[in-house]
Image (cartoon, helix red, strand yellow):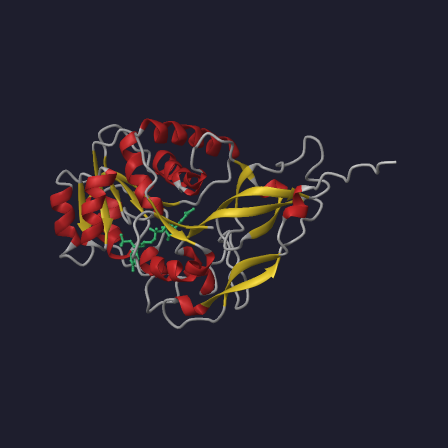
Length: 356
Ligand SMILES: NC(=O)c1ccc[n+]([C@@H]2O[C@H](COP(=O)([O-])OP(=O)(O)OC[C@H]3O[C@@H](n4cnc5c(N)ncnc54)[C@H](OP(=O)(O)O)[C@@H]3O)[C@@H](O)[C@H]2O)c1
């Protein structure tokens, strides 16, 4: 009598046993270098009941890791990194197995779904199903889901309150957030968009590829003079990812009633002489008072509806060519520590992603 056919293999049977991840190997003095990280082999995690197992395809290489390595900042959403910890951050990948509860009917993501989550820097991640954002297939290349447009959109619409015809200054305008903010300011009707960078080479690309009307370059002469030329009528909105001398110069160039959205602090975060956890700057408060200027710090809001509305708009704008996702791809886990060192040194344009 013929034996009954063997059961169909579940997707997890096809999985390898070994994963790889990037860990902090040593605490640096000054800016971390590739040698302060190690790529190690580890077991592929088994997803718990409420978790899914994700095979990561892309993860984001970002400067805030310097702050976490330096001990973190109280109140920030991410914990500090200790020696031996795996790094983490935004990632996009495919669900390859689901835990018992996560796989229940009507439950979380299913095998085969592409999801966004925050356990990057490893080949396989066991992620709480509730912490995964399903991506659908509206974008031919899911890497664009690592764009930081939602943070930029939120800061420009609700904090900067960009209005038609405004002059907007985006510091760090070639970076991951800034490259989106410059383009979004234009979408919102800004009349003139000025960017800031520390690199003359990036300045050229910013006008040619990102639509900036003018760019000021840190280290290429007084920023106040450069801003006076770039924005002769003054600034209405400042999207600030840098702080430091760029924030100070922007304050001098601001018009009455200008709105400043303080989003990042790269001047302190990436200063070799600091530990990345503070960003001191001296400002003339008289300028704030007499010009009725608003300075407001802002973080990425956890607001699923707002984010999903932005995503729909982003996908439409990408498809129509109204906006681009400027990014640099680095291939393979082995290259990730070097890519992080290069981000700390400002080598790249746009968002930096590792592709696995
Ligand atoms: N508020 C929030 O919710 C939120 C969310 C995400 C990120 N952030 C913060 O926003 C900031 C920007 O993040 P990002 O991911 O978009 O980073 P990023 O701009 O891509 O960071 C890399 C860039 O920083 C610039 N840089 C390097 N050293 C610098 C220095 N000493 N002073 C000034 N700039 C320097 C370089 O650009 P140039 O060569 O062009 O100068 C470099 O390419 C970070 O401080 C980040 O922590 C905040």
